[in-house]
Amino acid sequence: MKTYSQKPREVEATWYLIDAEGKTLGRLATTIANLLRGKDRPEYTPHVNMGSFVIVINADKIVVTGKKLTDKYYRHHTGFAGGLKSISLKDMMEKHPTRALMKAVKGMLPHNSLGADQLKKLKIYAGSEHPHQAQQPVEYKELEVIK
Image (cartoon, rainbow, N blue to C red; front, top):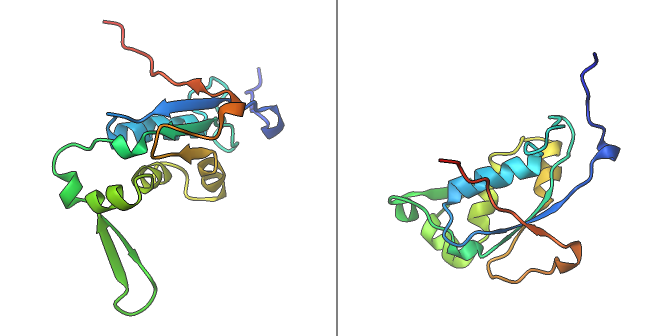
C-alpha cells in the first residue's frame, strides 16, 4: 500500500469565520495557524499549501492574561545605527489592533515561502464587519470536549 500525498490542484479551500471577542491571543493564534496549515484535515500534507481561508473579526477585543499588556514588547531594527524600535502590546492594540494577532500567527507558521503563502489566506478585521460575504464563510466553532 502506498502513502497518499495530496497534490496542490486537488485542494479545495473552505472559508472560516472566527469571532475573536473574549478569546485569548495565543490560543486563538494556535487555532488559526492549524487551520491555515491544513492540520484539521485527514489528508494533511506538510509541503502543500492546503489550508483554509480564515476571517477573524473583532480582533480589537482579544484578551491577554497576566501582565502581558504592559510587559510584552515587540521590537524591530530599522537597519540604521541606534534604530532599535519597540512598542508595548497595549500600545500596539490601541494603534494597530490587528497586528498583534498577525504577528502571533506568523510566528507559528513555517518561515519560508510556504508560510508566506499560508499567511496570505488570513484576513483580520478590528470590527465586526468584513467584505467576504460572497465567499460564504462558515462560522468556526472548536470541538467541545465531551465530559
